Length: 159
Figure (cartoon, rainbow, N blue to C red):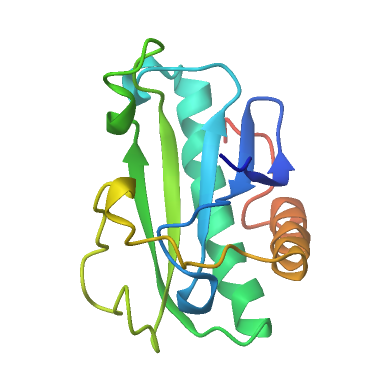
């Protein structure tokens, strides 16, 4: 199995591009936000971590949309989804993470305006989906850094 592609990290979270995406790069792309310490679900986040998790999701969504626009992909909307349920039968159990999906207005597989299709991997549905490439990741990282320095999203997390 491929490893995820690092984009950015904070003291408490990793932001990574999916190496095996649920949304093809040309249809908007797929990014994860993972806590560095495994948690079962969002109810285990402290209030401070919950604020950081939410704020990061907002930053990453905005960065994905703006960066992909410069890369020629018209992301009309960004979808956010807490996940972890596919780990329920693994020894480590489910692990909280957020999926962030760019939804391109021109998408033909995961069509804009439709719910994201999430069949099990074994179906082969995602086999030909392309992940974000190195240039996409660089653009997204640059936008995340700029947004975190802006008045709109600046630190500290608790504000």
